[in-house]
Length: 554
Picture 1 (tube, rainbow, N blue to C red):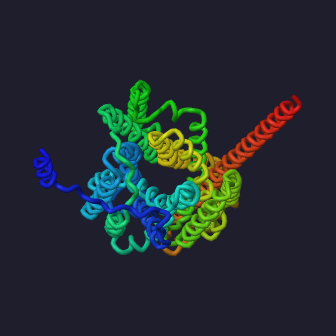
Picture 2: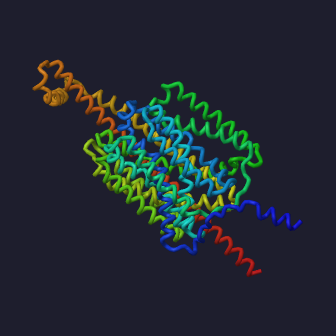
Picture 3: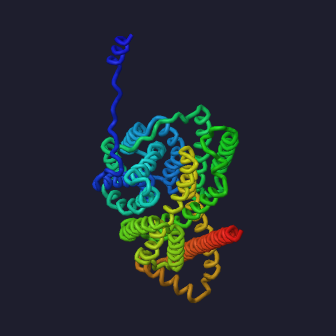
């Protein structure tokens, strides 16, 4: 019997021995820096894929012979699968192992990046962007894991989380900085050749720098597949609706209403099924508890106020005729301010000062928004250096303390609750960003129409000042146009352009002011909340002291 067992043992295939990661405490400094750099590369690779279209939306119109709304659909196609896929990937990673998950994820992203090189028209680009959104979803998770891997347990939620969340802010300014040179080189192909190069750089890191693999646990159930499909369709339609709503206008296109209705139906079915399950994909009761709703509200406010930088400020400068190559230094300062904000936040979190970090962050963002609200038609990128640096610094300072608190609460509940916290974070950061950008763009459009109507009401050709301005504007064409009627019409057209530009300036100023007021209200609410917590703590201490005194007297 023993001989048979020995024979079977000898003939059995030997299990594949994976390289074991070095314990964090024993790592040399260069290896710690290598893990951090690998995580930042993952964030940059994924983030550039997400931001490269929005950073070049006007330039890509010519590349694909498409309208502005059609090019915006490329971003919608990317966000549709990305919004929900990370939730499913968490369970897949737990059940099938971290290393196979990492290897398959980076290989899928490399393949999706290669597909970009074969894009020939708008429709093929739309399909490839959808595939890219699916393939990019795991990279943000890998970025977090690599950076947190570099630190011991006591520093993961302080220094590690600060660096990781700062890494999520770097791709947007980098995309604006590098886009002009790449577009001049070879247009769309150059953009995604660079993305492929970054993916190929990240590929060997998965094998050279292993991650600590937690034990595998069977967590996927058959019902998870069905409920995930409901969630994916619901969030996908939701993301497309808010991405394209302001371009096709919310109430003017029937299919936008169908998308919203589909989203509501599928998400409602998802909630109804998940609430009845004993082991749901998402623990909705915990997600919708008061502390988590408060956390989600804070994160949504954060995304709304920081959208001032990613969409509103850029939209204003583009309306003034500025392009990416003229905003390079501005986004370079934004990049440096984000890095500095992350470093200061790490120091504050090490010294247990999350409340101070939040107050300072909101104060800086509000100050930057109020400065931007004083813009004129002569404002250029130079006038935004200070305000946008303040906003970037404040954004990097705000997010890590909030995330550390949420991570801590999820870890105390157990590893399964990490996916629920990730759901909160992803919904507020991805969907919140899409919603904020769409609504702020809508607000700009509405206010522009209002200011345009007010300005036009005061423009009368019987007014000598108006007649003089029309004559001045048409004078530039006097040498090439002899017909006075056509010359006057050309002057009126130029005056209408100036009126439209001034209306946009006023509309963007209203938007900056709205963001500043919203941030100020959030700061006021935070101060009241911190004051209430401090008062409650003092009352509790006094009650404890009184109880101890009574006990001693007895």
